Every structure is written in structure tokens, then in C-alpha cells.
Length: 141
Image 1 (cartoon, rainbow, N blue to C red):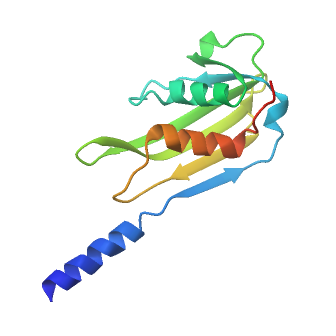
Image 2: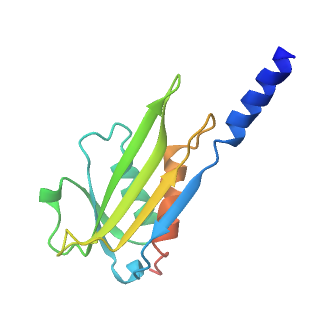
């Protein structure tokens, strides 16, 4: 009986680990081809490089680094918060992405939150790709 209860609890934990991806704001981000990804000092997984690479794959011109290194021709700034956890290995549990106009940094035009709790995890690259594909339309080059 105890084994059955344990297995039911374990199955419940696995099912409870469903992911959610929420998008706010529907600005046409595809009109802005030059994007700067602001690097976070506490980014242990190199998410800024992954974001820049995925945006490049979608057809955007990207640069990354501290905000003071932003090129003059930048049109959008992408900031992010990546929350990682450790369960015998580090992995990404939550990714929050914010898109701002480069000339008005305090204004937010779009946000996305990818939350993936539970025992199963996705690679950070896949989480970033799924998030950015929902926010940024692919550009025709």
C-alpha cells in the first residue's frame, strides 16, 4: 500500500511539472531589425549569448554585452532574468524576457515568461528558442 501511495505521489509530481509560456504585448517587433541583448552579471548559463544567437537565426542583427556597449543604431533592447535551480545539475526553471525601445529604456513594449517547474527540464537553448519565436516574427532576409 505504501508503494502504491509513493508511486501515485511521484506521478503527481511529474504531471505537476507542466510548462507555461505567457506573452504580453503585441507590438510589431519585426519592424525593428537591430536588437541589443543586455548581459546580466548573474547569468551563469550564458543566456545572453543564446538569446543573441536565436534572434540571429530569426533574421535580426544582434549584439550583446553591458548596456554601456549598446551600438548607436540599436532599435530594441532585450533584457532577461533567468532563474536556475539545482537538482544534481543546474538547469533553467524560469525565463523572463522584456523588450524595450532603445531610445526609451523605461518603456516596456513586450514581455514573455516561460516557467517550467517539476522534475523534467528542457535545455536552456530550447526554452529560449520557444520564447523568442513567440515574441519575434521571423524576418525575411
